[in-house]
Length: 528
Image 1 (cartoon, rainbow, N blue to C red):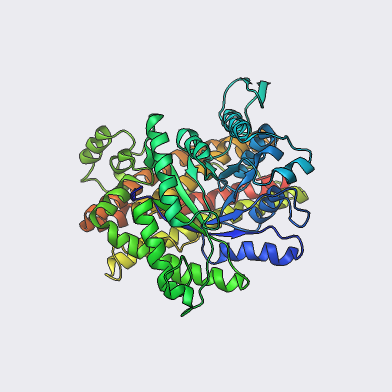
Image 2: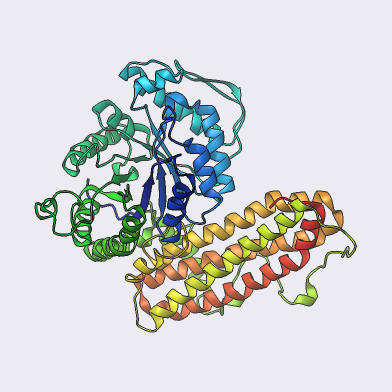
């Protein structure tokens, strides 16, 4: 499996150890603080010394900002898939789209049986897992009642929902031919572990996945490969001198993980730390991850830049706009206009005097839920303000000659932003999606509740909704300008102009929203 230019992710593989609850949770939050991307948590419900994985992930979600939350992997025989689908969708909504799903057939049949789980042959277990995937995807897809008639799992009129806020991917922990074939046919990703499959073994396993994908009419490159890894940083050890996998100083780790990324298409490395867990994670995050990204970036060269311009999934539409050549032609027509004069759909005057104002209720008392809702809105807004400044900082580094769009990738991957990509343009795409998701949640949930609670808020909510549409158009233009700058550094001035427009409009919008809505949210007890 060759490199497919996918963005590299790095993470922590945490055992949900119940013997020291505070340290276990602290280790997970440390991964977030260090700027790692993924938190993988194993699932063995029959282990009395382990926390329940889903409850643990939910707790960590409330204490972190950027980590992808990943059961690594769920024991499907002990998790009813329809309920698991709703649990995953719920956590995805509450974590702002940070959930991915790892599934397995269950590694310990005796433990499963002891918990009252089904006793299945290997063939039946794989068949049941495929049915479970169909159940989960059906309940994540908006639509009418679902009917599935499987041998192991059925749906008889179950209604989908709640919908996750992003397309949750399904990774399979697979090692043997029939499971690898299932991965190639239906999965979004593959998650082996070095403790069970060495890099030499994963190469042959990856070939079986590729063949199954091709036989099913799928592009093997669409199956993302994440690798749980374990090792030791003990420099100068005999194991390190022999070149064993991840046994030696960080330099050895960088060489070996870079090779896996470039020759086997591994796009995430999730570390199971040793006894010195915090120290291992810090060295992994600060010494290994940036160096691997830099090495892979250098090896990708021109092809890496092309992949970055296409986006994470190699989508050429990302480089030319949603509507392809038609959008490009429209941009050519507007090239000579100043950013504020370009077409953005509705024209919104940001003059304070023209904005509707909500009636004030100075004597109204805030509810506890309302106060929490108001604080949550400010928290989300402050995150958007902070990340906007991070984009500006990286662009100014490019302008000052301290870095370039390609080298800036490793800097961006250390920012407090989930789903970091390999280019400035792709990073902005991630930020744009976060802003758009935030606005969509407001329009479809918070605004509806506010309008129901106080009809006098209607003009303010209408205006805010209009501004959301305009800001979405500005975000799209900034993303397009950043992608163009990757190919042509002379586009820096255009990027700055678009960023100035976004900053002026978004910051003004956030201030206006807080001025008019924090009071009603607190008064009406709106949950944000």
